[in-house]
Every structure is written in structure tokens, then in C-alpha cells.
View 1 (spheres, helix red, strand yellow):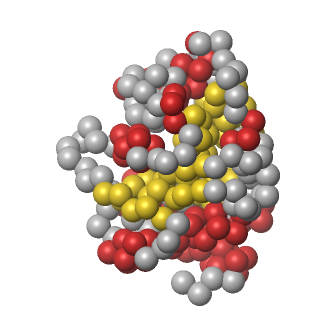
View 2 (cartoon, helix red, strand yellow):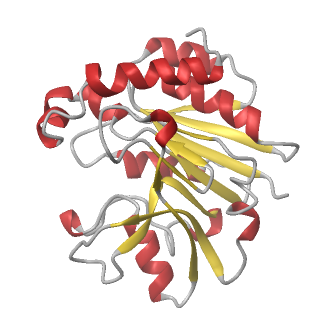
Length: 245
């Protein structure tokens, strides 16, 4: 079992970042690991709790202007990682299956250089119709800046993190893909979210709901709101894991 550096970017949302940390601990097994949280927000509750966790390294990456985004913050965290294998998770994701790393991190080699959740969509810059989505993306640290780019470099023609898949494919290398499937256990507010892929549960929309609820409501035609999605989802997660926060 390879040691891993788990990197996530947090903007707000104490509930979900704490859940991520606690579920990583519960599902990591005996392998060496660290959790790097790159903080972009002003959530004092999250920072206070995270700073007291022995397996968490809390970094600060303030947003300066519109060009400093999630991908840049993620790259900053990866550069600080101690281990050779990086597991990038969104802050509203967490592991739910024991094989979440054996089927991704432990399968990387000189040919298989990327692993994670297969997101299907057609973007102008991507002829493949799919890419490994950055809510669960596993790769070698040495590939950052060459094969792996986490920021958006093609404007609106490619999504955040999509550049990594394009470069891996263009180099004749292989990405290990795990399909994204709807999580019926947490069926709230929308027919396609939340989801599970490769042993990782992903809530989707959480950070955006916290920061721009009206924008998300408009985009989802009223299906995703704090009342219809976020709050009932938190209630189900509390019941599932016996949480008291």
C-alpha cells in the first residue's frame, strides 16, 4: 500500500470538511497518509477545528482577483505534499468503500498515470467526451505541471482539472476510470446528485450553495436549494454516520 497525500481545497462549510477528514480516517487503513487542506475562505470554525487535527496540514491560499481559483489552490497544496501519490478530493466528498485507494492509488504505474471519477460531457477542447473529474483525481506528484494541470488553461472550452486527462491521453498513457453513479441512499433534491464513483461519495453543489444559492437554484430550475437539497442531505449524513455536528 502506497503512502498518499490527500489534498482538498476548502472555501467554507465546516460540516463537510470535518466529515471528509473523519471518513478518511475511518477508511484509510494502515497506510501512511497526510491530509492537506488548502483554505480559501473565512470560516473560523473550520480553521479552528482543522488546526487541532494531528493528521491535517492546514495551508492558506487567499484569493487575489478573479484568476486565482480552485485549481490554482489545489496545485499549491500538491506542491506542499510529502508523499509521491496525490489523492485530490473536493471538500464535499468522502470515501465510502474500503477499495477507494486500492483501485486508484495502488494501480498507478509508468503507464497508468491518472485515476478517479469518470465525468462524461462534451467540451470543445476535449474530443474524448469524458475526463477524470477533480472531485476525485489520483496522480503522481512528479507529474504536476507537465502531465497534470489542475487549473483551467483553455478558458470555457475545458473544465477545471480536465487538462490532466487531455495531456495523459495525448501522451499515449492511460487513465483508470470509475463511472459516476447516482447514490440512491441519499436521494434528495435532484435526480442525478449526489453520486458515488470509485468508492468516493460526492455531494456536488455544496460549496456553490453556500456561496451562491440563488445562482444554483436558477441553474437547477429550482431543484437544488438549501431547503430541498443541502439541509436534507446533511440530515441523512448525520443519521448515516451518527454525527453530532
